[in-house]
Length: 247
Ligand code: ARG
Image 1 (cartoon, rainbow, N blue to C red):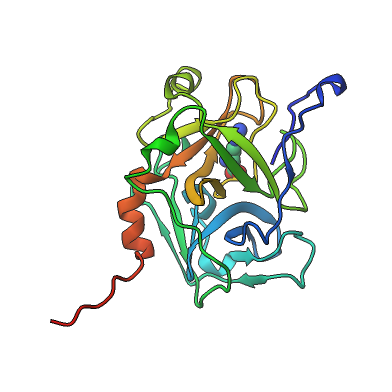
Image 2: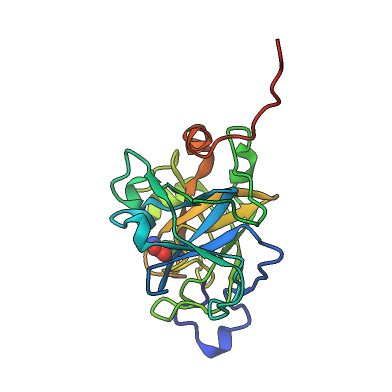
């Protein structure tokens, strides 16, 4: 999670990311391969379900994946858990991140001991108004060509108007995606943050999906617009069970 795309030393009063704690964000996870190399983020949305990006899961077998939860410092092997998922669901229409449907759900063999994060639904349109301050989190790169982060980072990224995103990215589909960040760049998500959460008001608002470079002027990050997929996600993730009423 980023910082600056070639910002001169004199400009560095705003740096992109700051440290975030796992205690305050217990639902964030990172994904690694079997050798422990981190490549994406994810969000615990139910005790056995982790939401991530389709492009993070495509072409991987469950056995080659690890979901690491409860670990803020990637090097702290004592903290949290590392779990091999049981199965992977990828949106049926997914082709590539910039064509939308960049959603996947990993099912775990047992319940994680961390609080899940609810995801936004059809009633949450107000969260996507331009200017709404969202918070993105991850262990991704801290500059466009830099290294991924040892520690969990976060940055505040306001929702940008859809017409701004459509102008800068011809493939932008406003029903399926939204952009967040600053027209001037400098603060952004980056490689390794994909699949991870962007949140507001205690809800998952988006999934980090794509962008041109990182933190570049006029090239904000693009995120999955969760309500568009809420119905499908409820069927894959399962909604909280309603009380059983006996006839
Ligand atoms: N696709 C990237 C990943 O796999 C995320 C890129 C986000 N880019 C951006 N400029 N915000 O981690």
